[in-house]
Length: 64
Image 1 (spheres, rainbow, N blue to C red):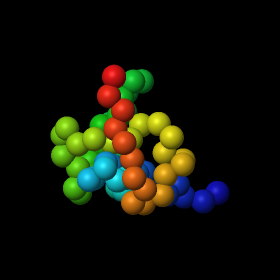
Image 2: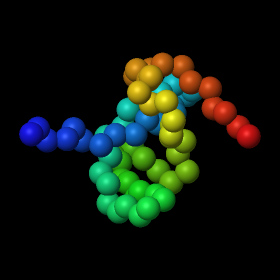
Image 3: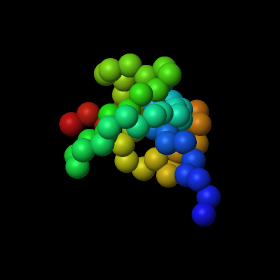
Image 4: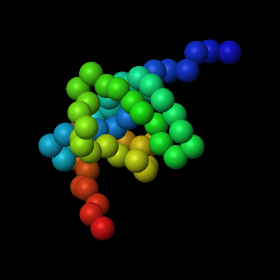
């Protein structure tokens, strides 16, 4: 049994995707509270398709 890697999210910076290591500080059935060194409230993160990403890949934000 190996330890899980540090949790990370993908952040959108200048229309590119970059991984950001985070700490999970709270979890509910519908959300998680996270803290990251360079993460601020309102920052855009990627929720779907993260298994397809590599650091620096161009991304386009989808607005409904």
